Each structure stands twice: as structure tokens, then as C-alpha cells.
Length: 60
Image 1 (tube, rainbow, N blue to C red):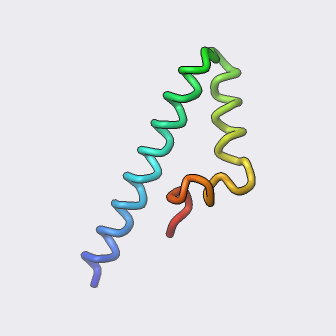
Image 2: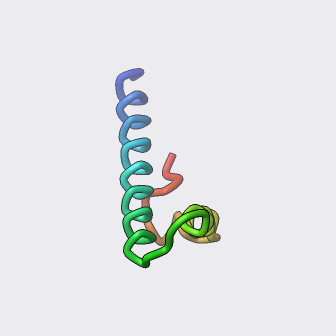
């Protein structure tokens, strides 16, 4: 039982990190640099509904 919970937590963390990486690459591809890059990342992460659109962020 504990192993299943641990595997689920690791899977959720890996999926969230992958989504963050994809979002970061997307923002870099837009040519955004410096502080604006992190502001845009924060705006994307906090956008209402982003978790439903990506299908994986916040799946606990």
C-alpha cells in the first residue's frame, strides 16, 4: 500500500516537472528573456483552468 502511494507521488512529481519543462521551453521559444520570462511562467502556472487544459498539473 505504501509503495503504491510512493509511486503515485513520484509519478505526480515527475509529470509536474515535465509540464514545467515544456512550459519553460515554450516561453523560451517565444523569445522572452530575463524577469519577464519568470513572470510569464508564473502567469501561465496561475492561470485559472491551466490544470484542466494540461490534464496533469494538480492531479493528486
